[in-house]
Length: 211
Image (cartoon, rainbow, N blue to C red):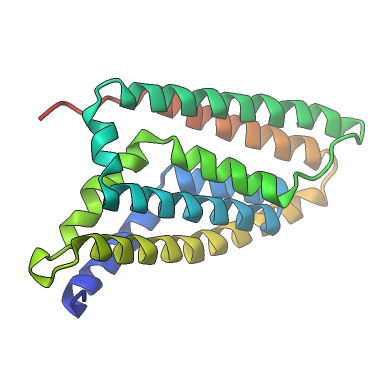
């Protein structure tokens, strides 16, 4: 249904996207360093799961309806920033607990949920799927919705593979840090700073100009 030339261009564009530093990369790296390879993998799963939701919303027109409501962008970014501020505060508090040995590893499912929700409430991600995927759809081939779902599914799988490798790499860095005195506190502090940076970035996003 999708010709090979279009598919090749799509995959090249996706690869360039993954190699560009962004909030998802920062989220995976931070959790990999703080939680090890398992934490990086959990973040990768959550991000890809949210990508699938964004794909379905773009393919069914839900994203377009949300984008048409002017306050939606601000509501999403404020909600996302508040959530990231909460994660930053929690990571900082866990870092303090780690000093006296009270901190416990974060459950796998919790990290998945955090990554999923963080990606889901990112208004830039929502707009990205609405604007990026249709560029590789050929209406002449028919089944436009199915083409969007296939492209989004491939992007999500590619993101899972890339972020899993990224999480494994950063997880090895985290394991190296764990062999150093005071590493647990440092890892949680780094995670807190990363979440705080992502929250501030979200607050400073400019609302897209109406067309």
